[in-house]
Length: 99
Length: 382
Image (cartoon, rainbow over all chains, first blue to last red; front, side, top):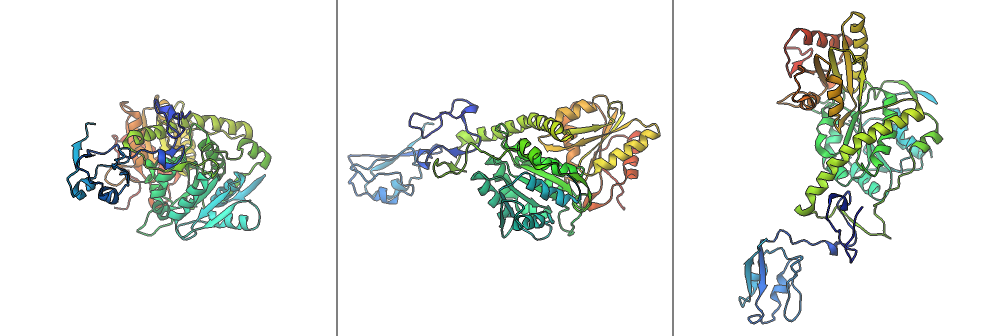
């Protein structure tokens, strides 16, 4: 039957029998990672960043933290690129995902 | 206890005997009296269930989905356009692996507006992941609803079932139905106890976003559940036979052992076909009838094994896949590949037109004289 990860939040999926019968999360939705289809990755250049937090404000997910410096959460960032466009200091650059 | 019941009563009494917890239904045409009967029974205290009156068939099945996900055994009934309106939720029920049971009174799709028998409504829901079975008589309606819960709720299956009965030929025709006794039924069908359900003490998120990393595997599991269901259907049919005296399988072969010509059918045509087979046998024609009970999971191996010795086989479809052929004929043909048994596809009885014993005898005679053909329109007025 279903095997849980160490934190008990996700399924350890090694074989077909490890999956529950229906799409059901074992805990809250926090455990569901939703970034597997990202094709570009925004990278914040710390030396250029002025901590204006516009990226944090514009991120629709929200996958950028209001911290010093701001950090992108790649478990949820979909690579939409809005932060790259909105950054007034060109401090966020786009890198292609290698996957 | 034996009673004289219409198919609608047999379906309603089946749900009562299964002690369903929630019934959700919408009462307008093409709905039948199945849900009217249930609403009366619930209102009079004959069944401890919640009867949810909703604003459409789509909502009826949606309500069943919610209740079943919360751990209730649920039931609904519909027909034709009503079934079509449920389509989105029909997919949802199966993919959420909720063993809902629904009685579908096979009625023709409009226009022309028709409330007469035609299986095209149900066949249109073939690829949704539901198990689908077709009843020959009212006893089979009652028995199948009990078995459908037991089969669907099996941990290796967890699939909903559409129990089909032909409009008027069963729904409004009275036949003797043995309702058995409640303790025997309860021993056969214990209360529903799902392992995963909506539960505030053990929270789960249901129907969540499923990425390409997992969706494929969930689909594989639904297919695999159908494969396992074949065995569960056989075992449950045998157990039913032991407890109640009537055994069921995925198919029912009648006088097929030495038959050169086999007439394949489903629904009420099966009863007429048996009568026609008896008449032809009296005249020395080696004919048999093969009733297919389940469209899904499709009993391909069983069909092959019955037809192994046949010299020809015809499929009688009370349904049509426009632009191609009869849907059950397609299934049988695919199951028989690459066998060289000549196959004939008959389209008959659409929109409730009678299919008589004489019609069925003429099909057998046609097969003996003519080359195979996938679209033989029986009695079409050209």
